[in-house]
Image (cartoon, rainbow, N blue to C red; front, side):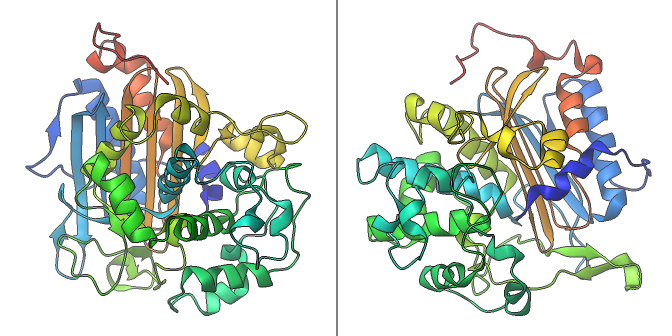
Length: 398
């Protein structure tokens, strides 16, 4: 769930060529240089320890390229295919942010409301706002860093259990709210509790009615081990001593990541979600602009300047509401990565270009090379590609 290790993506790794061929159901509307560069990037990532991946690229909601690689289940030798279902991990946070903003639209709550209005049992709730939770400036410690979580991560928890867990964490604050930035899954677990309490519905029902159905998502939902899920990928980690070099990932109850990282989805649903979000289906343009604008500290500086120095250097990004924002050669990149036991994900949208790229893999041991994928779409070798050229049909960016 924590994107810290994404800073390591700036370090290149030697590319090992092996059997990683696209399946027959792959499609491509990209020009050849982009396709070749994407394939090379995926092979490099898989060589680090990923049995399977899938990549999707869309422009204004129309898929240009969807290609699966490798294996979804090693024990049964099942290949990754387009309908393969992956855990979404922390990319879930933009769904939770959108859910909160839907309630703001209806004036059921305000971003400047104190958390104590909704979660009064949290000792420090009277000094934290919903806005600070959304942009990670609350100063609340991260339950995912708590040793108790490692010992009990297979235990299912309700949202009330999660609130009680966060209430027990020490120290109560890592810093005074609003003065710095620190990534904390606790922020989004608490936002999930707020959504449930103000709507009177479970997260599963609220997300389905307010997010998934309007966006046309049919394979997305909160993960549940009792569900029989067609095409569900198994998650892995690299293990040198294991037969075949992989071990099954450790089990974590999906109720623990919950609103911070508990969704599962397919690449096509993820592309549909991005289009629905950025085309105004989920949120009106003014609210979307608020979501993808850099958050601010109490002194007026943006979130980037409250990050630890290593994050400032490695990410060179601000944080909005459930998304990072980075200035690139193709304009803004609005993105989030996700890491959870057995899975890693990356979703990026370029508002000025109207382009979205989604990557899902069933491994926790290989870093998705986001820089290489950006270069594949917008670098010099793709200078003549159709997706780079503005057209009369290009929509204004929020």
